[in-house]
Amino acid sequence: MRLIFTVCGFIAIAFVLLISVYLILSGLPAIRQVGLFDFLLGERWDSTNKTNPAYGILPFILTSVWGTCGAILIGVPVGILTAVFLARVAPPRLAAAIRPAVDLLAGIPSVIYGLVGMMVLVPAIQDAFDLKAGDSLLAAILVLAVMILPSIIRVCETALKAVPREYAEGSLALGATSLETDFKVILPAARSGVAAAVVLGVGRAIGEAMAILMVAGNAANMPGLFRSVKFLTTAIASEMSYASVGSLQRNALYSIGLVLFVFIMFINILLNTVLKKNKE
Amino acid sequence: MKKFATIALALGLLTACGANSTAPSSSAAAQEGSSAPASEPASETLSGVVNTSGSTSMESVMLALSEAFKELYPDVTINYSGTGSGAGIEAAQTGTSDIGLSSRELTEEETAAGAVSNVVAKDGVAVIVNPANGVEDLTVEQIADIFSGKITNWKDLGGEDREIAVYGREAGSGTRGAFEEIVGVVDACQLTNEYSSTGDLVGNVAGNENAIGYASLSAVDDTVKAVKVGGVACTEATVKDGSYAIQRPFVMVTREGAALSDAAQAFLDFAMSPDAAPIITVAGAVSANG
Image (tube, rainbow over all chains, first blue to last red; front, side, top):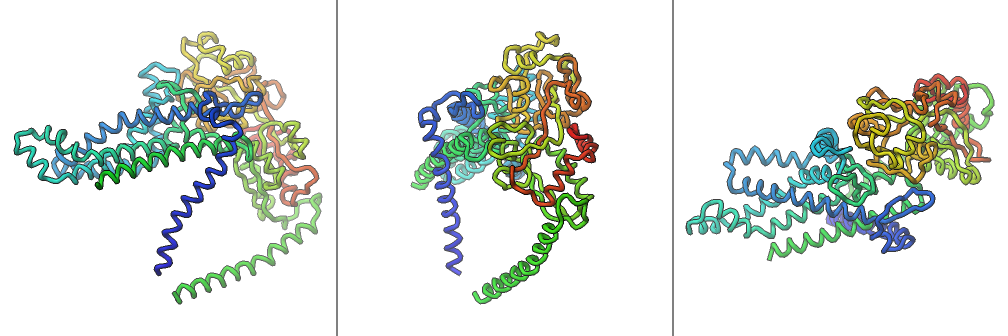
């Protein structure tokens, strides 16, 4: 029986290794062919241009970075405040009603987020800012901000609740208002948990593809709030189906996958360091 | 652990039985197939699997053709997978599919590499705008200027003072390739947005008054308006007689020198025959042989 458990344990490791090795092997040829510098810092992506193809993914990298930053900028304050509300302020009955709603938000498939974004958000942005088309980085940021909310809220709430009761009692006994207690005592005491929540949100936002594929417009522009943009993830998703096997286009898509993988690894390492600090 | 071993043994026996029972029947089918020459009239015993893959634009035509073919030969299964024209041609060349599907003409390199073109139908690429758009008629030059970014406002084309949102398909799409080649804007398109399916593009043109896009004639519905090109409306009749400028062939690609299976050959013959013309018409394309 023990053997079975061991084997199961190793399956996960085997898959991680398999994916890593596969991505590195299939991602390197295109980088070597295009040149690391031109690939990462090239500003033009035109993979099917017959006379002068270009494989620069700087627009995708910057779009992914800006998109994630934007989502964090909106999602984190809202998420933290919701968590404070749930953990400290809300009457238990109300909190019991909000918590399942947050969980439900986490369970909604990303394609549904994309669909609602496409039908509601994109036309609204077009009207509000008088644009020729509403598909834009802004639409993607708003969708991502909502998508990362649940994980931020739940992790934050857990961290806030783990703060010893004595902290709050001591603070209140010293004459601080409950608002001061929440923001100057409890939140700082839970800061490493909050940091973990933020990093988790970053990871979710940078890896999302389906929802933003439907609202971002998918033209390979340098990022601009009201421009149609392509993320690292959507670049792979939108072009893979038509890229012929063995072509530089397809290999370059694998290389984008490799870059994305490195991003995610970096974020995971960051998360682990934050969590370790948390324990100490 | 003993229990597990028993189950594993039983499973092994079951699969072994399965293999034994299917093996004779499949070899029998192969014998029947090889004894009946392809040129003989429809025999009810024709069976097998025909794998086709390629152009996503040909999906509706392929579904209609395989449905009709299945009525003639119930034992033949026709598989279709929409992988894109480039992948379809490659699949025919490498033999991974019996028939490759391409919604553009084959290049010289491809024919030199042994791909054979069988044009089954023609398809008009309609230039579509939002129904609220007042522009009715555009020339091919104007369309080229719009897509290459020289004309950016509808007022230059007799419409309202609105910026043009240029919608196109993603890199590698057969519709995009055909459109850009015919209109003469290869590698010159300045697209506002790119979509990775025809339905997505049509839906977004339907939702945006500023938008212009292109789609296969068969995919155009009431939610969008197809403009006239050079005074010619995009209809099946104008595509067939060649007067509508933006059109492309639907090609079934086979490999030179490689004999098709009987089922695949019969399907290809059926698709190329005048009998298939009404089916192709119903599917929204125009038969090339009817």
